[in-house]
Image (cartoon, rainbow, N blue to C red; front, side, top):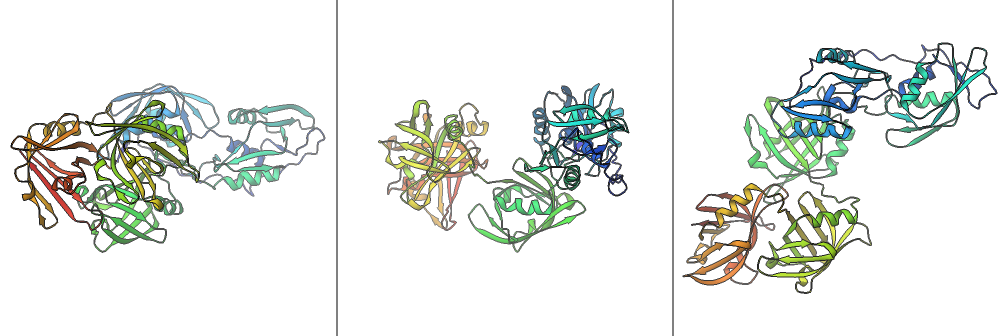
Length: 587
């Protein structure tokens, strides 16, 4: 996605960073009995390293100002794509990114409402009256990790300093509580002032590990080594795309990736490849599953290019993916790749790992909406008669299971499992098929999967929220309820079973009740639902039982192929052999 910040054309003056090594004076050791530490002059290398470590890191708001050398003081207002947003905190910066990420193809324009006040690296404040003044500061900022500030390590406060005059007489004692106080303390020192630290001093690296130093030499060594030990993110890339090859190589195999968008040679191929699942192996292999469950094997490798990390994909059959792709954006569980001539791939992570989710959090997830049964297996037996039934997890441990006409009630609770993870315990005497302690395996935005594979139990639920209705779902539902339907075609692979449904009328009624009749005589009733699943696909749930009659063959969560006022086409792909079954209704 292009991003245009309407400030000025940024020119980064990539000057070489000042090397504070052998060209600096040696440590000025001052013997003193007034303090337990050794001393150094205010102009020594140790002092400069301390100042650089306590500099303000202005990279957190680069999405606004495009510079890591300063930060805008809160509050201020920006106009993003015509929308005024007041920024009162760091968290509010996410609002800007949400607007930028809403569409992939648009040009995003951000205007700062002047005047603003900025804080520079040394914590001095300046009022900026217009974009020209701001652009001048941006041009003078050294970025890309070539600046003097040290962001990969921090002091653990409080830290105590002693000051001495040239006669080695102690003149003061100062305890600083944060970077700003530390920076101002050194700013007020004279060239001939002598400073001593009270050791030991604790430092914290960016990865959270702590280092304790006991003298000036150990302190200087720790600060020097931290200078280039991490990615300081000193750039205008708000999505933190600065992945090294090592990080990207470890990141891709962490989870499967679902294809959202594919554009190749000027043609949008998203419809062909949408919902394909990529699994990257650490050994350089990549496995792709298509929507039919078929597996395609290929290879992937990485190299560092002039544009950053580049990912090469190679398949015998998936030729639209065979290219060297550059990482355009990584963030929020999504990766965007681009190639020459506008070629583009967008994928999102499909981890689904509940991680360290607490019981209370899962309880809230379950209670906030209804949950539709997509699949339930009990002791290795699929219970198709429950497909499309809706759970309502209510307060006080009450749970109901309904098909629109009949409702079963029971109890539910979420607890920590004995082997780790969370367990959903359901007890429902009227429906033993769901009565079990279900271990949570996957948690996505709108799907939950519970599984005890060793015992042959699996429960997959899709979320349906009445308070956030889906316009497409409502429209399709209205079409289905607009009259009686007949089966125009039923094809299971090459087998034509259409004649099995001759003379039957299907009515999609209120409360999700599906009725089948002939010559006005009611034959059977069942359940229907229209649902948008966790992959964003529209599904039509039909449940006419799991008996031996022809109506039971229609019980499934069907993929919606197309719908008009007089025609509905559905399909299902068998998870076993990949057989495609097509079901067409007409009025």
